[in-house]
Image (cartoon, rainbow, N blue to C red; front, side, top):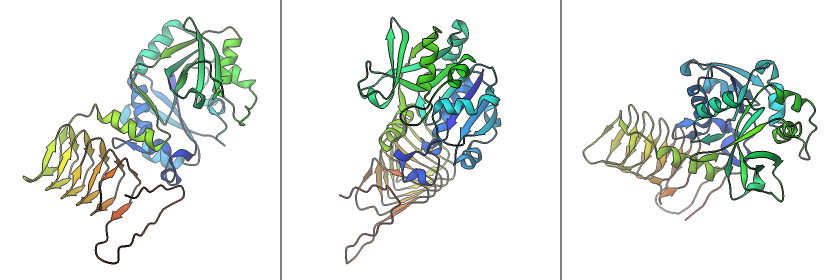
Length: 354
C-alpha cells in the first residue's frame, strides 16, 4: 500500500496567514498540520508516500523533507491546478500505479488509527473504504447515505443533505478507482469530485465500505477549527522542561518548555507548549496556548492561542485570547500621550479591539 497526501489548495479561509505559507504547514501544538497525517500513516507501516503540491510546493518540500526522519520515502507530485480530489489522484497515477493506496487530506486531523483502517481494508478487499463522521452542517461537506451500513449514495456539498454523515478526509482505494475517475466530467463548480468517482464504484455494483471515525476529527481550514485542533492536541500533551524557570515563576499543569527558553516572573498554566529559545518575562500564558520558537513575551497575557515563530508580544494592554498570530508578527503597546493605535494588516486580516 502507498500513501497519497494532498497538500495543494489555496487555504483561502485562513488568510492572511496563507498568503505567505501553505495551510498544511500552519502549526498545531507547534507542529505543522500535515505532519500528523504523515506520522499516522507511517505508523500503519506504509513506506511510500506521494505528496500532491501546488504553488506552495517548495515550502512544503523544505518543511517536510524526504521522509527519512519517519523511515519513509516521499515523492513530490506537482498538480497543475486545484481541480478537485479526483484530479489529484489522476495526477498521481504514475506514482500510484496499480497499488492500493490511502489518500489523506493534508489539512485534516483525526484521532483514529490509520493502521486499523489499513488492516480492515486488506481483510475485506473492497474497492474503497471511506471515513465518515456525524456533523451539524452536512451541506458543507461530501455526504454519504447508508443502508444497513452499506454506502448507497454520495453527494458533494448537497443543498438538501439526506444524512448528517460527512466524508472525513481519509480514503482507501484499490486500482479500480482509476477507471471510475477516467470517465468523470467536471462538477458544477468545475472540479473533478472524488465523491462522483466513488459513486461510480457504487453504480458499478462494487463494494464501498464505510468506517465511522472514533474520537475526533477536524478540518483545520478555518481559524476557529485550527484553534480547536490545537486544544484537542494539547489535551494529550506530555509535560517536559528543557528550558529554565526562575523561583518567581509558576508552571502549572501539563506544560512543555523547549530548549533554551527562559521563563522569568511568569505563570504558565497548561496544557501549553512553548518552543525553543523563547523569552517569557512578567507574563501569563493560559491553557491551550502554543508558542513557537524564538518568541518573546514581556508583560503580556495570552490564552487559547497559536503564536508562530519569531514573534514579539510586548506590553499588550489587555489579555490576548483566541488568536492565530503569524510568523514574525509584533504586538506592542505604546505608552504615553496621545493615545493612538498603529496597525499594519495584510489582506483579509481580522482585528477585534476591546
